[in-house]
Amino acid sequence: MKLIIASNNAHKIGEIKKILAEKFEEILSLRESGIDHETVEDGTTFMENALKKAREIAEISGCAALADDSGICVDALGGAPGIFSARFAGEHGNDKANNALLLEKLTDKEDRSAHYTAAIALVYPSGKEVTAEGYMFGEIIHSERGEGGFGYDPLFVPTGESRTVAEMTSEEKNLISHRANALKELCKKLDSDA
Image: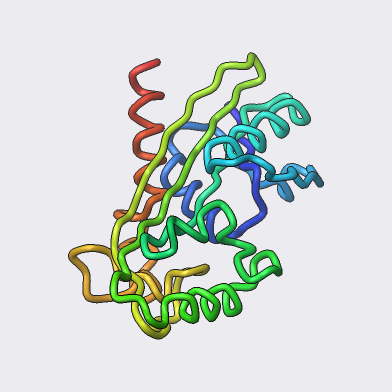
């Protein structure tokens, strides 16, 4: 079966392809499948956004579609930036600006605990839906470290680690990330359905 990932984010697609490679015969990004579509993410939760994206791409393509919505939730900021993680500083996907704003908002905060959340939705052309969520807990440090990863990875140290996610290899990150945890949960559900 063919799967279309409702994204063109190369980091995200690479992570998803590695984890789901054995579950589908072919896994394509939107670009690879020739679909030029932007879902309006107007949900109030990560899962609402993921389901909306997956449903739209399944309908457009006639194939199984997988979407995720993910972000970082900072305890001292009441869970912000949350679903607005990618556009926290205004411009979508401006990691440097988003990280700078996060550090600015945490300047006088002692509690720097945070967690990444990933909501995954898999929608089949038949209308069947399988969903899963995953988390990675840790804390926000005071300045960026590391060259890898994307988003808030240079500021986030997972619980039990001394390195930021940006200091880890993609293989190390894929073992513990919120997206990996959500995809593992999804795989369990797919295996139990088989």
